[in-house]
Image 1 (cartoon, rainbow, N blue to C red):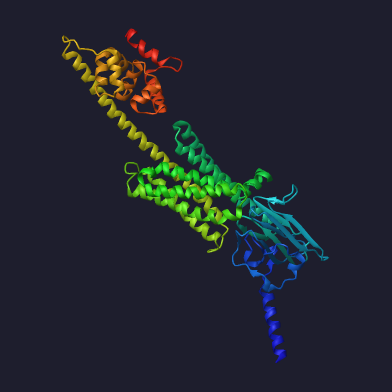
Image 2 (image 1 turned 45 degrees about the vertical axis):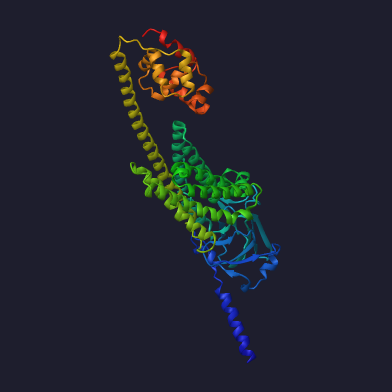
Length: 529
C-alpha cells in the first residue's frame, strides 16, 4: 500500500512538471506569453532569487491571460518563464510596457552563475536596451537547451506585463510593424489640435481653449507619453515625472473636460441637478490632483478608475439628454456629432475599467482601442463644436437682421416726425433736465435726447447705419460726458460690459484707438457732412 501511495505522488509531481509549458524560442512569434508564465506575489518584498528559485511549482500561480495584470497594490511580483532553444540562438525577453517602476531579471548561465539585469523606469541607465516603448533583455548566456528566467517587478500604478520571448529578427521586424500606426494617430491628433488653436485665436471662445487642454493633457501626455510609453523618447527625467504624476495630468484633463461639457451644453440652465453632480465629481478629481502632487499613487489608483468610468458615462448621458431629448441640435445636425463622439469613449472606459479590475483579461489591442476611441471622439467633437459655432452665427445673423429692421423703422419714424411738423417748434429740454432723465432711467430719455440732439443722431446714423438702439443710447451718454462708471451705474451694467460696448461702437464708427471717443462725439455735429 505504501508503494502505491509513493507511485501516485510521483505521477502527480510528474504531471505538474509536464504541465509547465516550455516556450520554443525559435518558433515563437511576436505574441504575449503570459499564459506560459508562473507568478508569485512577494508580500514582504525581500525574498531573494536563490530562495524563489527553490520554490516548488505549486507556490506559483499559472498565468490566466496573455497579459499579466498585477493590480494597483504596489506589491512585488515574480514571474517565471521556462523555454527551450538551440546553442546558436539568443533569446530576447521583451516587456512591452514602460510604466513599471523596477524590473530585475535573473537567470543562470551554463556554469550555474547567476546573471542579473536591473531595469525599469527608476533603474534605467544610459546603456540600457530600450526598444520602442518597452524594455528588452538579451539572455545571451542562458543555459541550453532548456533555460529558465525569473523577473521581479513592482509598479505603484497598475502593473501590466505584456511579455514576449523571441529571437532578435522577430523582435526587430515586429516592433517596426507594431509602432508604424502611431505616427498616423499622432498626426491626426496634431491636425485636430491645430484646428482648435486656430478656432480659439479667431473666436476667443473658452470652449476651444478647454478642449485644447483636453487634447494636450489626456491624449498627448497621458495616452501617448504615459500609457504608450513614448515619454521615454523625451528623456528619462520627463518619463519618470509623467509616471509619478500621471494622475495629476488625468485629473487636470478631466476637470477641463467637465468645464467644457458644462459650457457646451449649458448644463447650469438646462440640467441644474446634473450640473451640481458634475461639480461634485470635479471636486473628486481635484482631490486626486492634490494627492498626486505628493506621489500618493496608492490612494489615487482606485479613485481614478471610478471617476474615469463615471465621468465618461455622464458625458454621454448629459449630451443625449440635452441634444437629443431637449432638441438642442434641432436646426443643426452637425451638433449630433457631439453625442456620437462620447459613445466610443464611454464604451472603451467600461472595457478598460473591467480590464484594470481583472473582471476581463487585458488583450494586446486594449490600449489601441483607447487610442482609436480618442481619435474618433476628437473628430466628432470637433464637428459638433463647428456645428455649434454655425448655430450661434445663424442666431446672431437673425438677431442683427431683426435689429436692423427695427432700426430702420425707428429712423423712418424720426424722419416722419421731423417732416410732419416742421412749422411747430419742438420744446427742447435743458441739458440738466436731460441728464436727470438719464440718471432716473426715464423711458422718455432717448426720445427727449433725440429731439434736442437730432443732428447728432442723424450724423451717427450717416456714419454707421448698423448702430443698434442700445448703442445709440450709449452714444447719447457719451455725448452728455458720462464717464464709464457713471454709464455702468445708470444702465446697471458692469464696467467691463460698458467697455466692451464702447469697443464695438468704436469699430462701427471707425474711431481708432488713439482718438478720444468723448471728443469725437462732441465734435461730430461741428463737422461738415
